[in-house]
Image (cartoon, rainbow, N blue to C red; front, side, top):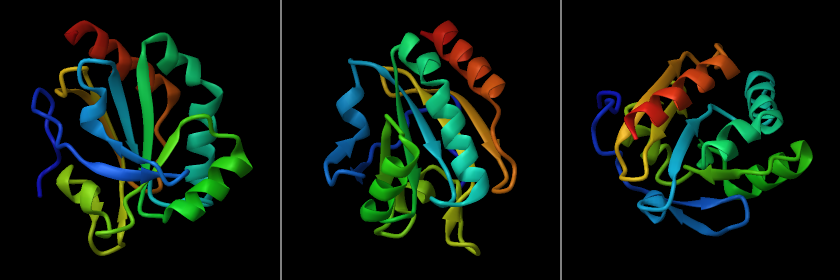
Length: 157
């Protein structure tokens, strides 16, 4: 499946967060924008570093009234331990079953590896993708890339 494109409707989904609560992308429509951050796996060096950088710069998203949702193929119990261990104050969503189903809908699932690549989609409050950052699994996204994407989101709004 091709990667979800800018200026298109973001595929809706329902996943479970690290607390076992159901989260739908559409619940944010008309309320706030969303940064949908796909990451390969919890507890790995690059992913931990990347999400810690997001944790340490969470004000970038809060100041822009953007909900940060991080998604991986890990199960919710693993994500809970990961979030607690690292002090993540944002939702981690489990794309465990069907395995990588949401990552597949966004065109960022690496079938041969069974994980999502590093991909971020900035989705406005109407559900339209306004910016994206796509990196390979070993290449961390920079805070500057997030700043630029948030600027694109604000300009489009």
